[in-house]
Amino acid sequence: MKEDYILIIDDSETNNILLEALLEDVGYDTKTALSASDGWMLIHQHKPQLILLDLLMPKISGFQMLDRLKASEKFADIPVVIVSALNEPDTIDTLMKAGADDFFSKPINIKTIVSRVQELVPPKATSN
Image (tube, rainbow, N blue to C red; front, side, top):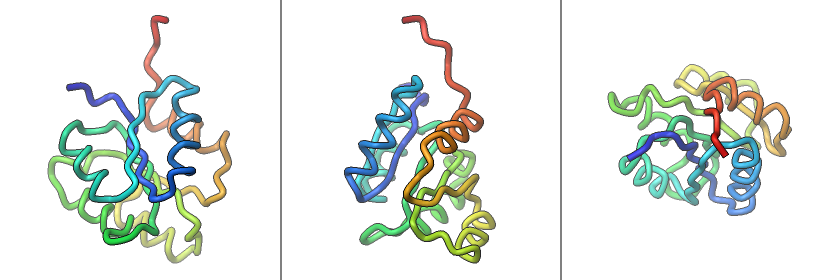
């Protein structure tokens, strides 16, 4: 199956809906997960082009999810953009060292996050 989708993992349905709407508006296919374990299942079914990942989630945190992804030979190459309210410089530094490709603080700046996603995963030309 196709890999050309962006996976949004956030335990807030509101955040998932917002990010999904923003990205679909500019032509991306998306899938959402409300937990890291749901996200992990989707990743195993169909590898995404990019993951937008929240940090503060029950059971498995975004930190643990990032570590798992980057430790996996099969998934380490997926770009991961962190979207979180945890925006202390030390936290961001730790995430970047752990393999995150970028960090966006909540509440998100819509233009900058869409533009960064477009840099990491150029939109495909649509034939509609």
